[in-house]
Amino acid sequence: MQRVSRLHPTVVKVPCQTRRAYWGALAAALSLVAALGYHVICGEHGYLALRRERQQYLALRKQTDQLEQENQSIKKNIDALKNDRNAVEKKAREDLLMAKPGEIIIKYSDTAKAQGEANPSKPSGSDPSPAH
Image 1: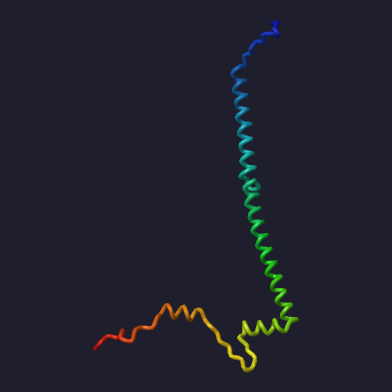
Image 2 (image 1 turned 180 degrees about the vertical axis):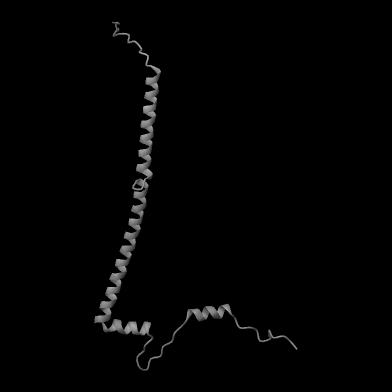
C-alpha cells in the first residue's frame, strides 16, 4: 500500500481511454446544449417565433381599435340620421345634391379644372390638318 502525503498530493495519471471518454462526453454535452439553445431561440415555438407572433398581435390589435372607432362613428351617424332632422337635411344636401324649392346648386369640380390645365386650348392660328 502506498502512502500519500497530505502536504504534497501526487498526480495520478489517467489512462488514455478514460481521457478520450471524458472529452467525448464533454463534446456530446456541449453539442446537446448547443442544439437545445438553437431550438429555444430559432425553433418553431422559440423566441424568434414569439417575437413575430407578438408583432402580428400588436398589428391586429391596432387594426381592431381603428375598426372599433370607425364603428362608433358610424353608429353616431346612424343615430343622428334616425333622430335629427337637420342631420338628414345635411346628408341629403351634401351626398344627394338636393335643394329646397327656389335654391340653386352650384357644384365645382376639381377634376374638370385639372383636365382644363392639362389640355389648354390651342391658338387660333394653328391648324393640325394638312394643307392641300
